[in-house]
Structures are given as structure tokens and as C-alpha cells.
Length: 293
Ligand SMILES: C[C@](O)(C(=O)O)[C@H](CC(=O)O)C(=O)O
Image (cartoon, rainbow, N blue to C red; front, side):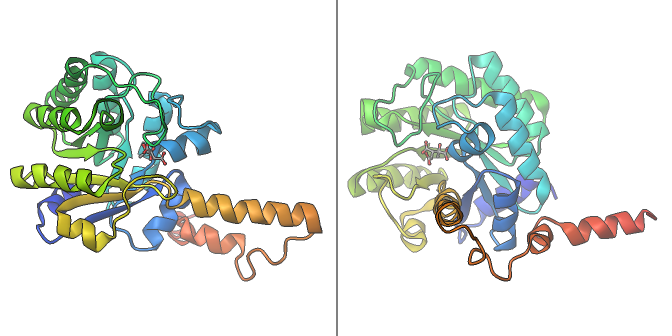
């Protein structure tokens, strides 16, 4: 079954909340699959840092993002990938091309936002968004490209308008996007309980699937999976879930080696072959064996 079909089934299941840990490369994706998550979220921030070594300031190009998303999506077709597609990387034609590339890569869902190019992480101050009309044209391009290709991808409209323009404008933008044919809404960087409750009430009443992004260490309202489910949130992603523990643990190991001159205490019992196993080693060797090598 195609990953997108699986995701659509999850979206249709009234009991289900989709929890997507934020992964950004092959290893974090494999670890999340091994941990039993049934969906993944490709964080643009993490991808920008792991692939380019650059902060989330809109520097990753469409091809860099689409390549990474396609690689992650291909690891296990049973685990749908929801991927960040930032601003769509240009005007309507570019957005259309982005949708085509994500679809060709087997990505199950993608989100498109209304920040200007160059965008920045949704939790940074000083965000700017394009006009409502320009955002609508990005959304129209995405919906039209999906129809033109006669394939499927779940389209998620994200707005960053809350910080610069306020809640009413942000909700209007998402409503416009729903009318244009997106499947899911995503209000980014919600900072008060009241805002998240209003957001959820508006779209729950309309029967539109709601996405919310929790990012550790930011001002985003903290809610548990159970609370999210109660509020009617359908997709809950944790963009920095893999990134922050990786940063902490690796920094500690590096410091230890630099200061103490040894690293034995980091990872007793964990050998590279064990991690190869998480990355499909046995399946790959079996495939090779069956081919007669
Ligand atoms: C959701 C997000 O777009 C991402 O890239 O994962 C980021 C998260 C982050 O900065 O950690 C965001 O803009 O919220």
C-alpha cells in the first residue's frame, strides 16, 4: 500500500492521533521506525542543519529538501512521511514543481507556509509573511499540481501569520486554504492556551484535520498527546525530538574526549554493527544472498 493511502486511512480513523517524531536524516528516521512510530515528520530545521550545517533561515533548496524527504520516505513504505516543504521555494511554478518532486519521492504529506523567502524558523522573532493573495496562489498551485499529476499527497496548509498579524488573520488564511482544497491545517508557533483552544474549536467544528507542532525549548504551548487528542488534534509533530538529544549527547561525548582523552564511557555495549542493524543490515544482506552473491 502506498504511504499516502496509509496516511489517509489514519486521518479517517476517528480514534487515531498521528504522532510524528521529527527526523532529519536516514539514521534518525531508522531509529524512529525501530521505536515503533507509525508516521514520521521530516523537520526542515533539522534537515537544514544536518544537510547544510546551516540554521533554519530558508537556505535549504527545493532539491536538497526533496532529496532528503524522498530518501527518508523510501526507508519503509509502511511508515508515512509528513515532510516540511517550507514556502514551496518560489512562486506558483516553483511550488508546483516542489509538489511534483515530493509526490515522485513517495512523501505522504507536505506542508506549505506563507512566510516570505527567505523564511526563518517559525519560533524565531521577526517573521514576515506574504499577502493573503500570494499565499492563496501557492496553495492553488499545490492543489492544481496534485490534480494534474492524478496522484496523491496530503496537502497541509501552514500559516506563520499569528506572530506578525494575529490570530484572526491566521485563521482566515487557513480557512482560505481549506476552501482551495488542502486536507489539513497547521497554525504555527501558538503561544497561549486560549489561542490553541480557539484554533482547535474552529477547525474541529468544520471537520478539518488539525496539525500542531511541539518544539522543546520554545514558547510553543506544551500539551501532552492525551490533551491533544482531547482537543481534536489529528497530527502532532515533535520537530526537535531527535535533534536536541543528539546535540546534548554528542556534545558531551566530544567534550569528554577533548578534555579526558578517552571516550569508552560513551556507548558501552553499542557497536557500529548494532546500529547497522537498525539501518537494515540484515535485510540488505538477505537480499544480496537471495540474488546469489
Ligand atoms: C516545524 C519546523 O518548521 C521544522 O523545521 O521542523 C520548525 C521547527 C524548529 O525550528 O525546530 C519551525 O519553524 O517551527
